[in-house]
Length: 43
Image (cartoon, rainbow, N blue to C red; front, side, top):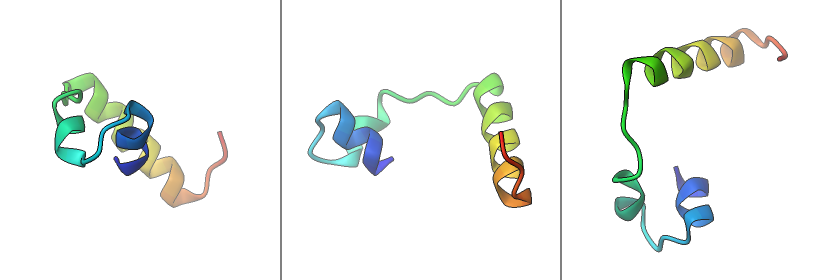
């Protein structure tokens, strides 16, 4: 989140929050990426 805020040029994370919206598809992708990361699987 901090990296995204910096990339967008925001001075705080609160401004970045409004750019993000959790959709069902996004949450599935996040869960899959987390599982890959925790299992040590390379992409």
